[in-house]
Length: 130
Image (cartoon, rainbow, N blue to C red; front, top):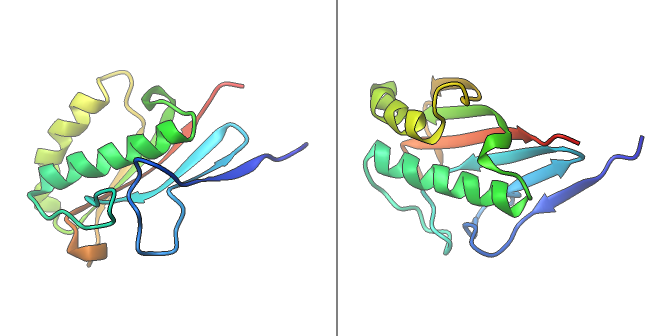
């Protein structure tokens, strides 16, 4: 079996100050690195948890789309919070982004600290039909 692997970086994605790839595609799977509320210039944009989650999801979907994948291909989402008290608010956004019957598997947890002092970090995996 030939394994095809490529790294996703590019226009419209945050210019990370850390040495990471936005996503890695292996055959029909896309692994999106943890996305934060970071703009295309690589600057952290502080806000409420829901504002930061919105920007993190926007970055997540931008990395996904740059990889040739779509929201409907997402099979797993990982959400890290700096404080789990923000979960109910972010859950409302999650329900809008992923309607019932189309929600990927998900984990949530509270991290001791997120990069840049962020409130929310979004990571995930997508799979395309061959």
